[in-house]
Length: 32
Image 1 (cartoon, rainbow, N blue to C red):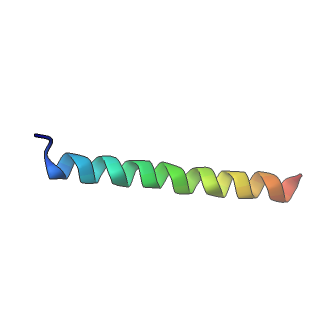
Image 2 (spheres, one colour; image 1 turned 90 degrees about the vertical axis):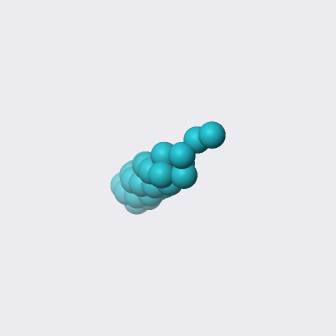
């Protein structure tokens, strides 16, 4: 079975990328 630590790290990485993407989109929409 997959280790919980691996799942947690993967989840945090995905969430981090998601937050960066949201910030990026907000900045872009503010400039348009």
